Length: 257
Image (cartoon, rainbow, N blue to C red):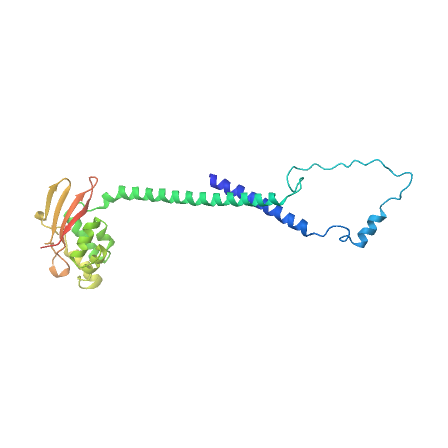
């Protein structure tokens, strides 16, 4: 059990003891005492069992044998008000410390879980990025045809995504995909036709230029769409940076001239 768990458990016990002591003290003070409390029947019964005085009266004190008691207030020692107050304060303090420890521990576990998720994402991210200019265009076409912006924006670096959005008058990459989706005629069937219109040779070989350092520039201003009316065929010029020897992220974008 963690330390905060012990604090909660012990604090709960101490708090319960303090409540018991306080309740016992209040009950004892509120109970009537003295002769006025005793009923006439009780007084009569007590008087009946008192032996008359006489020569045979035992004058030597009788030693009373008491059962063993614990040196604990309420179980052998008299209780005091300050003891109940101290127990309540200690119990509340321990419970509060346990709650704080629990919250801190939960926050640390949440942060660790998020770090693990981020590490898993960083490890998987390069593997799902487009590896060529044709892969990039096909991803954009698929996102536009199906109106799923997340499929066409995850591979943009933040600034490149903003530049791409501005090229079509949008404020975000996702909004830009929505704008381009509305340029596909025919609804769902039109989207299927648009995807079919972009085959394996969606870009000419000269559209991709390797500039070294794992970077390449993809000119997607002349996308091969057949028929041309199936959907957008001018996207822009993308600079792609390879990550981890796998896929490439779009790190820069410029509008078609």
